[in-house]
Image 1 (cartoon, one colour):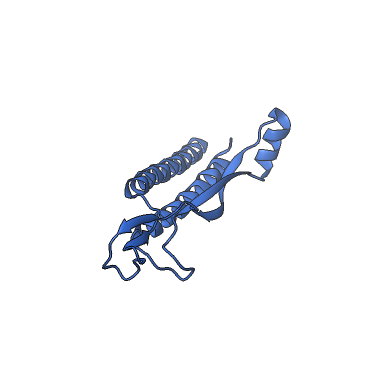
Image 2 (cartoon, helix red, strand yellow; image 1 turned 45 degrees about the horizontal axis):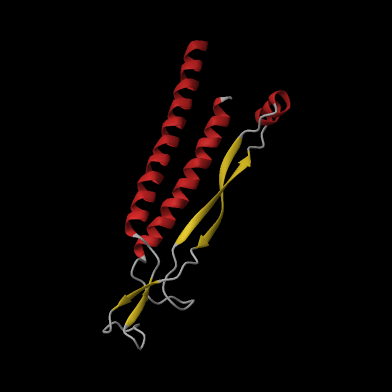
Length: 145
């Protein structure tokens, strides 16, 4: 694989992880939002990532020669979790029902924190891969001198 292709793949990974981090941040910011414009509590959002063929000359050559396809990651959708909201007893809350229960967002703090750490590490891995490609390209230029 040439270094430009590896940089394209890593940069698509960076964009994907950035979108995941934005979504996780939104979930954490709305962990106690009980009223939204759509009605009801905030619903946890999640990113749908798809592997898309990297359409460039090198990828096409690789596919033709070895039957392998080079893929990049692409965010194709952001979906809302359709599970039921958590019902919390708080009769003094302005959004409490007649029984005193409040429909809270279906967000688990620990799940979001684990997702955030995983996303951060994936982002760092893509940065490391880009830096390695840059270093190899620089070394090749230096050898040519």
